Length: 401
Image 1 (cartoon, rainbow, N blue to C red):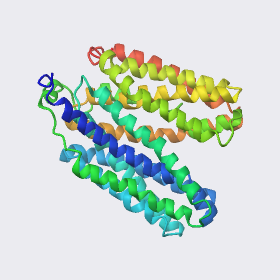
Image 2 (image 1 turned 180 degrees about the horizontal axis):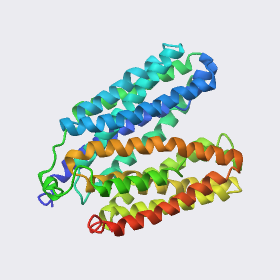
Image 3 (image 1 turned 45 degrees about the horizontal axis):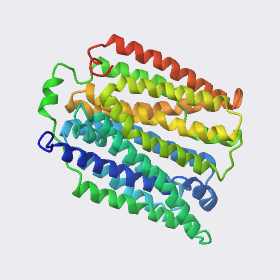
Image 4 (image 1 turned 90 degrees about the vertical axis):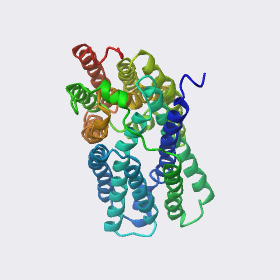
């Protein structure tokens, strides 16, 4: 049996270790992000507009540097050094927040963290794509998404434990910021000693040699995903809706953990499913799952419904996040994947801002349920666009639909 696939073990070893980067990175982020606005407002005394500016800077800088790092990944055909720089910038910027209280310093350090977040994403996706082949790429991205999401489950649990142990300590926020660097230290060690650089597979070069750097199939797919994202507002609105319907404050972290648990549990099986029945089928399933979940959020009237909806919402993430990136790897020549992932990650991040603005306006001006009904409608239309895309480019989908 081992002689059939001599590379299988090493391939998935690399995917696993790249996934571990996201796991420990997610723990670091979710240890401090939920309490950081409270630290800025209650301890340092900054106003809400400045807090909004700092978080906006993180999003903007991350989006810009996703494109930059993708370009550098393709230019130098090296991913590990770029990923290292990204994690290292977060490693030094997050604990330093405990030592500075001026607005300028906090703005600078959060901007540096945003740059780090942006730098690492595209080359990390390229590492996963290069560590897999077409027949197992969905599973590979599923493994990475599962580990990433598990980090978002473990991080808040660590935060809860730290807050419980330090609840009477006046320096608890400072300790949390310092502790947030520890998982990133583990991440850097894994990256140095366990993750291996990948070269472009010769077979994939030949198989995709007829394509241009970023073909029309990519641009149309990106357009569909951007359109879909216009109806995909921040998950903060889901939390607000849960409270609006009647979920208690104590239950909200638990229901969010439930969502992440279902997401992590389904990521590998649904990623593997895309290897068997095709990426576009699974992405279409994700769009429909999103439409149904958001329709449910829009019409929900009881707290118990929120639990079921959050669990089902995890299916949308599992069918879309990793599978879409696997599909991009399928249609883009290996030497251009970095810039493709950079554009994809950046545009999806940028469009999330107007999506959340639209959702906020609909909530305030119409009703709390309207943002979700709007999102469900956008997902339904995006599903139609995806079907048209499939039949417009049949050769692209001959192995996927």
